[in-house]
Length: 385
Ligand SMILES: [Zn+2]
Image 1 (tube, protein in one colour):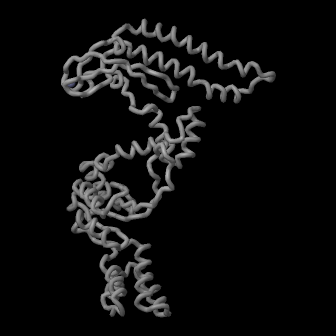
Image 2 (tube, protein in one colour):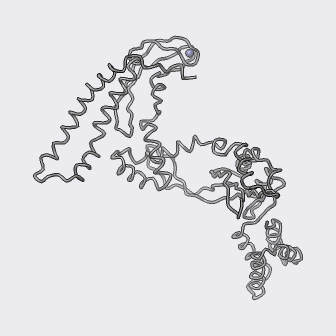
Image 3 (cartoon, protein in one colour):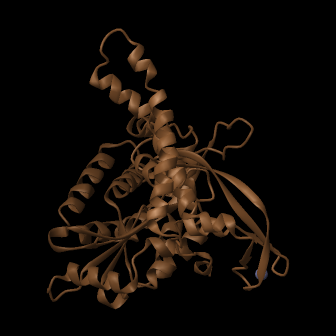
C-alpha cells in the first residue's frame, strides 16, 4: 500500500551535502561550548574523563547532525501542499504540520511532518513518516532493537542501567518493559514456528539416512508465573500469579541430540493452547516421525496433545513419574517399609528401562481405595518410550 508515498530524493547531492555541512557546523559550535567545564579544571583532564564527557554530550552533536540530515533528505515533503491518499489515491490538501519528537541511538530531535486528511476515506496520514519509516513511539527502531537485546537477557532495571552505560542515553525506566511487551504483542505463533519445508528439512536431518523414523517429542506443561499489571497513571499494583501454559516440540537426532522445532508459552487456557498446538501440528508430516507425548500426568495435558497428535505415545516425564510413584506408594502401602521397597524397586526398574515389569505390576495391583486406584491409573496409562 504505502510505497506510493515515498518520493525519491530530488535535489542534487552536492547541494544537499553543502546544506548539511553548513548546519552541522552550528551543531559543532554548540558541542564545543559544552567542552568548557573540562578546560576550566586546573589539572589536565584524563583521557577517561574526556571520554566520559563525550559520552554524555555526544548526542547533542550527533542528534543535531541527524536532525539536519533528516530535514535535508525530506525537504520535498515539507514543501508539498497536496498528497495522494494511500487508500483511494485521491489527491488531498495538507491540513497542518504535526510536530514529532524522535529519539535515536544518536540523539533526540524534533521533526515537523505534514498532515493530510482524506474526507472520502475518513483517514489521516503523514507521508514523511512512511518515507522515514518512523516508529509510532518516541524511541525509534534502532533504540528498540538495542534495548530488546538487553531486556531479553536480564531484568528490566538492570537492562536500563546497562543500556545507559553502553550508550550514554537515558530512555526512561519503562522503556525496556514497554518495548519488550510491544514485541511480544507482535509475535504471533504463525511467525514464530518454522514453515512446513523447514520442519521437513529438520526431520531429514534428525533421520540422518537411518531406516527408522526419528522421534518427535511433544511436551506440554503449565506453571505459575508472576505478572504485573500494565503501567498507567496510577501506581502499579503488587501483581499476581497466573498460570502460563505452553508446549515445546523437538526431534531426537543422532546420539539423542535435540533438534528444536517450536516453543510457545503464554497465559492462556487449555482450549486456546490446544488450538495453538493444532496450528503447529498442521505443519508436521506425522507419518514421517514417531511421536512421543511428554507430560506430567494431568488430564488436560494429555487431552491437549492427543487432539493434535492422536497417534502419539503418552510418556510421563521422569520427575513427575517419580512423584506419582511416591503417591501410589503412600496411598497403597502407607508409611511402611513395603512402601519404601516398592518405590525403590519401581524407580530402579524404570531407570533400567524395564517399563513392562512396572506396567504389569501396576495392572495387577489391587487398589485399596478409590484414591489409590486413580493414582495407579494415572501412573500406568502413559508408558515410557
Ligand atoms: Zn482516500
